[in-house]
Length: 147
Image (cartoon, rainbow, N blue to C red; front, side, top):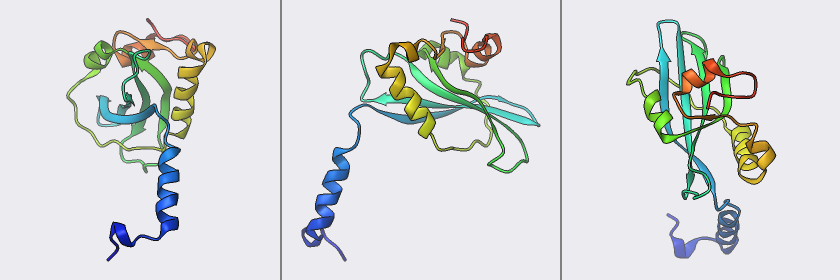
């Protein structure tokens, strides 16, 4: 059995170094919200939030997926790779429906979010939804969501 006082020094140094590489503002998936569910299709949002909260980012950020029921987990559609959502819009999107959802790698989302924080031009390309997620997606023109 390994105890803290018996860990090899190299392992302890590697762990400390790895902790130093964690960004100060990390996006953490905090919720999975089923937006619509029929006998054929499930649409859901993976909800992300800054940890710790940022005063310059009042939004939640979501990725929206759609998947046909009965298909393998790797067969899905990414409906919206990154959408900023107000807390009110997220609350309005809650349907109370239950359905099987999946978690997918979010490397691209994390890159998009980092650009959203640091680049005002990139931020302008990410829609901000203030009504309800499915309505925003339905009303969106390419590259824009109803505000």
